[in-house]
Length: 369
Image 1: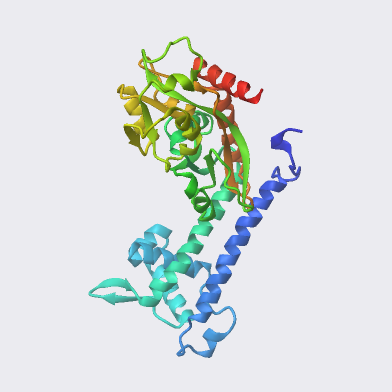
Image 2: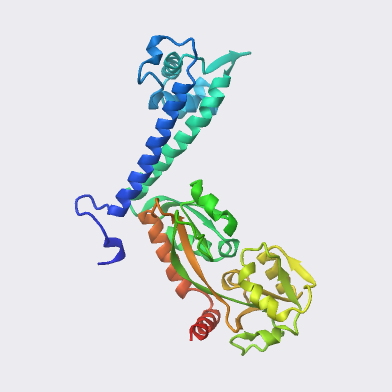
């Protein structure tokens, strides 16, 4: 049985994994709604009558939707256009919500509808619920069809310039109704991006090592030298570290995401602080292209820069690393997200300039043996 068929129910064509996704999203939505109801109950004013103190006498989802729209656009007319309902209906729902709450949500100040202090406090709670509703609806769309959906990705800068854009382009040629939201982030931001639900998954060199975060392999890469024509023999399939000692190396600050990957190479070649040190692999690559020195970078950064005037070769002994997809353990990837990561894994394995690909494979094979 293939990966896509694993755990699939025959009734609806939705796997147990996908049912779990919907359950977790719905549970989070219900919790947020319960928190909001508790918040409203705790913030009732003393002047409220007995009717407001009775169970259920708070804002319902329609009240919340209209309040969010009016607060966001700043007018009854704007909210009516946003919700595609009449202005009297919006006004009536706002007044009904105020009656249930026991306090005003909006007042007129110099002819302009102005939120009250209570409305400002309430909006912070409602906005979180509104975001969760959007997440729920997006998850439902993603599960409905593998050919549509929205994918939010956090990725290391070294992958954001060449590999990821190519993968997105290829994927959307087949599934044009799938949309993407991409953020270039560093390893120390991975956990926060996942826990805040800003990203569905992140792609990086190392797993976070957190029980709340699951990870699976996306492929492997290698570290090498990026240099201009004439610095090394073109017939070399890998650059021995000894040869690097005779060249000006461009240093990368420890804060750079691949800093720990290249540290063994730099430690074995540098006798003093490099003449040029940068905080970006892209700046290092640009300096290498200008002939300022040799940049030690990962193969994925190199792919965005290699050409007739700039070459990449893995270092020897080999320095290799794994790429992983990381996501919240409680929120498995949707079908459309899994399809994308499968595509990207295949591209990492097969795509790229043939010489570079073979050299990195040889380097990784040599390290394993």
